[in-house]
Length: 161
Image (cartoon, rainbow, N blue to C red; front, top):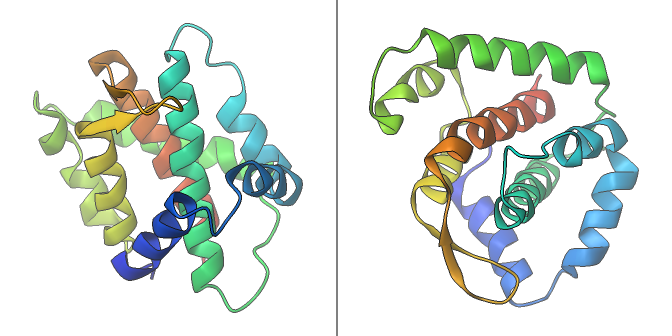
């Protein structure tokens, strides 16, 4: 299980530039090419540029957190695993009848052992974020669910036992 302390340490390393973000992105792309392609793939029109950048940042934070908590190298995730996890997450999202975004996520928390990672994603998507220029922005309501499903998919495929 990935703890809040691990996630906080990863974020702190990015903020303090103890970890070079651009280098971390390149390493992520090299270690998990299918997952990286999934995240930067065909999102045109779904997300703003700020949202696309933030999605990658959050996914990288998840990846680095899982990597930090693991005693072994993470297996290379394949496209089939990603597709299967994404479809399952969309099914859960669509089955939820709640109008409130937070309530729609309850079913995900019930089914995931990674509560701290899930809370990290929920908080990130419902608070204010900063773009590369340090300007605040909010995730659009239209982008919130697809971003959540994408990030939940990342969590699922990286933490599968």
